[in-house]
Length: 326
Image 1 (tube, rainbow, N blue to C red):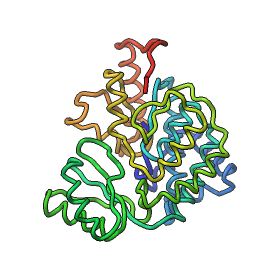
Image 2: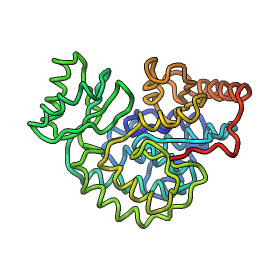
Image 3: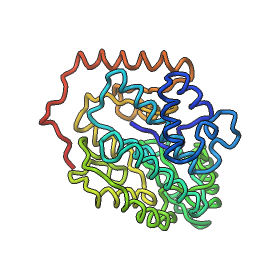
Image 4: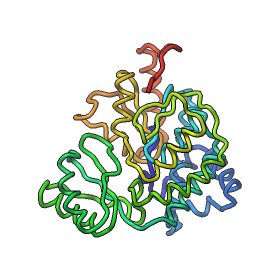
């Protein structure tokens, strides 16, 4: 599971480079591709490390890829993958639909398009159901655009839209549901319909990308299920509309677990957002792991690899006839 752009912190690249010198090499390669000094940009001493959406998207994409390379270097190979929002680009690389270079260039262009898009904000609401949020959204819309854009779990949802409407929703959630809405993005109303012009602008760039037929099923946020025919036309449409349509993360995880109830779910990236979404009320007892840690991340990652390897020895592997169907 590859996380989205909220999974970041200033020290993450310092830590990743200290853990493995190959991560420094990857950062240097990315600098050459983007013709930008990313070592300087992503230094924890840089006060503008995540100063714009372009820098956020490129940074999280690279951090996710570094964690993936470290896990795979230990012999762990995933049969399936999926990514939340931005994390879908790491998913595309993992399944073989896109090269690392082309994905990195696309993520930079995506971030630049977001920076040029309509202004707005996003807030996370937990713990609450979408049904309980709907009357709040309806009332707050009197002050501007507002939509549920991330359906992340049965009890966690993200709203996005105009500032005034979102602030009203936060107030109403506090007054009526006794929960605190937390602002997670103050500039970009991602996945909201007001971002449709950004999606269409990005579509023209997507049509130029040399997509390949993936060797692992494609599980897009837009559908919450796999796509049987992941041809370039389908990929372009999924990724263009992904910009201004809701993220169906809950449906994606439910779909995967319905087909493989014994699957191990590993968050591959900074922090533990996706790991924490899988709580006692959603897929209780699922085997879940996170690659990052607040303490000694290198030791933690090694323990995760050993735990996964031990689990693999005790459970049967999927056969070549096992496939996910849309």
